[in-house]
Length: 171
Image 1 (cartoon, one colour):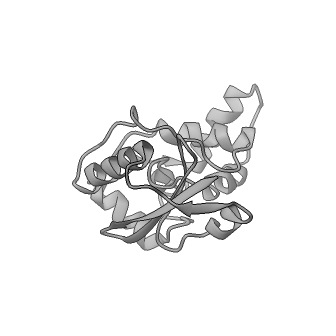
Image 2 (spheres, rainbow, N blue to C red; image 1 turned 90 degrees about the vertical axis):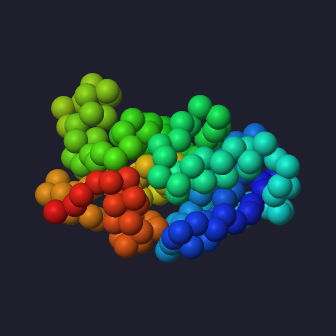
Image 3 (cartoon, rainbow, N blue to C red; image 1 turned 120 degrees about the vertical axis):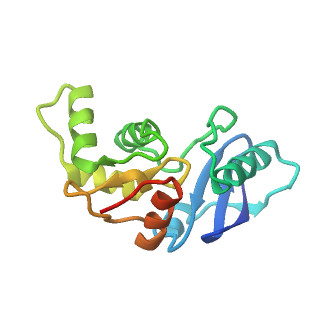
């Protein structure tokens, strides 16, 4: 059983999806791939007393207040996490607040981790794009090789807003 609710943010409504003890989905803005991710799931309205819901809302409150909240109190279990996607999402969690990385650099890191000569930046982009816990797993911190804002499931305007919120100046 999954539980859903909405969180009102400066970027509009954010859809949250929980399993009993973990956050499994967070979509904002255009919410690309959300319908695909939740198709067939049995859901009901989340109980406001649910601990993971309280912790997620506290994290979001702190983030939108301009802080860099810790993930220590959040249990994340992203929906549809293949081994490759999970590896990419783990790399996203290592990108510090207010900093960015490129798809190509992440691809090189994953290739090294897997003992491969190279890895496709496009494959990494596909995994980043299907991140079901955007914002907390910070896919907005990934840019094209030339520094351009590209592909964000929550919309490019929201990606720019989030990076600006983290005090990152884009050229």
